Image 1 (cartoon, rainbow, N blue to C red):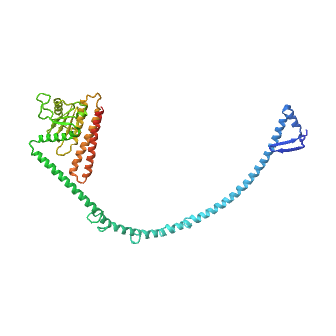
Image 2 (cartoon, helix red, strand yellow):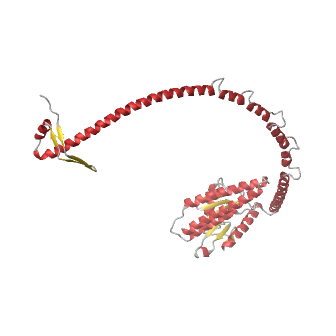
Image 3 (tube, rainbow, N blue to C red):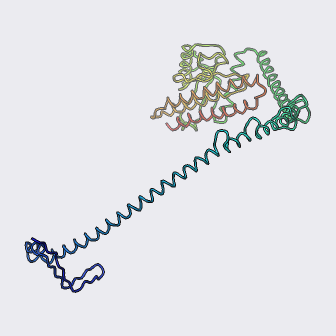
Length: 415
């Protein structure tokens, strides 16, 4: 059966923006009519519309396929030309590299050899600049300059650092140090002479122990006076015990500081060595004999029990060492202020408890400070060069000690 080509008749076609308008379209095609007859009548218009759209899209894709084939052929021709060009460029580059970087005939190796070789320009220049045998070379000039400053006794540096050469910086410094050391030596000689005189005077006194007790009594009286306290010499008077004279001195705390309540500190003076059991017993007896709440033992240098010097809180009592010849009352002043504070607290019948751990911690700190004071004073007698620094450190430590005892007094007053 011969297939008849479809015949399409249409009167006009128009395009308005994105819309295609076809007026009075007639398609004479048996297959199209047979396919459309299988569809519902109410969908014939939509089916024809899809058929027209599908046909137009197919035609447009066919045009793109043609364009792609054309582009592929053009790209193949471009690639072929690029291959030819690349090969030519590679040959030219290889030739240029051989001419520039060749092992012997290249321009770069020849240039490097000319400037950096054994006979090159740079090598000759370096020999001229750093030749130690030439006076005008850099090395020769540096050698001459260093010789001017460092070689021989007439060098500039030797002149500047010679303390014996008048006008040098060290000459003036040497003079100042000599004058300062001479002044310190004079002061130390005078202090040693005064100490020797005091020692001789005490040696000529009736009894060494009695002299110690006298100095301690006078020192305590001077320390108590600004606070309004009274120090009483009870060494020859009988106390509360029958025929008992324990308690060489008795400190009466100023009633204005205790609210009118009696507060006493019994003080034992010891110019000989005693062990802890004997000290504890005597201080307990002094407290009982003098109706005191706190007892203080003041030992001569080197006589305090082991570990007690320069200051120790032992139970309810206090132990310290005092050297009359040193003239330093710091340990004694600290011990007395601590004892009067404890007595003031005990005499007031306070309900609050004392922070003993805090008090002991502060006393340990003050013990360390006193030991440092002693060490520095020993250094001061043998080291004249650092006397000023040591004296300043002693003043700082003295302030630390007084701050420590003030803290304890504040704690006791608050409790």
